Length: 324
Ligand code: PEP
Ligand code: MG
Image 1 (tube, protein in one colour):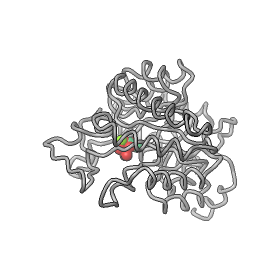
Image 2 (tube, helix red, strand yellow):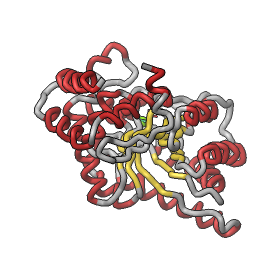
Image 3 (tube, rainbow, N blue to C red):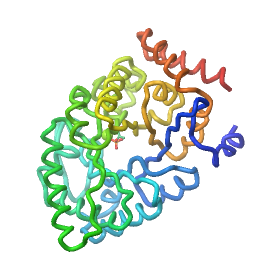
């Protein structure tokens, strides 16, 4: 099978009825980039900037971050690269910035830390904007958005950084901005968020965790964690609809996008692109090339009539097996 998949390398991720679903990869370290390029990634859909912060002993300064982001943007240019601002907290800790909390997943995490520490955020934003000068393939993504204020405050800071930099260098441009939809509140305010930015990116790991109240890393409750839970599917439907209403593309970038059964459903839901681990890319390309969007839509209807994630998964797997 892996030999067969290898033959897909040069072929586009396109359904039999002609719908292109760009396949991007998730990355966090420079070593992920070669792997992504080797698998034919059409860009980076999620660059987790906290990873390079985690392997250091102190905050990287603006120059160090600039050098790193520039390398990532150049490696894929002209293909898009989505750099996500720092998402520490939760399960991602920095030794040099200790945060002790009883309930870290519900605590000081992602954009919350960035807004409470504008000097950390602005350093990162400046490095990203400078790295994008003359290239223009940067998408900037904000994690853990749960209120419109989070976006509004971040936008003020980003716009200010952009204007300041433009005074010295007219190659600095405002990048496309996106919000992670990974907190249930963001699903219900997807319209308000979509109005403020250019794209929406569903983080299925956290969205599943927070919708189902299941720690994404706790083995004991792993059977309760399932991105095919009907509640997660209904949330995705709402986000896609909000994206459509505002002409904003919706992508999915959690691990579930690399699961063939979930990817098949996402195709039917009308998600515009997927971002996944490089190792899953060719398998998911096979799914996209094997099922029409229309077939995917029929499978979504079937899924909506089922009440259990296990039944939905079984139905999708049956279809995958029949397709080969
Ligand atoms: C997610 O939550 O699905 C996601 C992509 O972000 P992370 O896994 O980095 O929290
Ligand atoms: Mg997340």
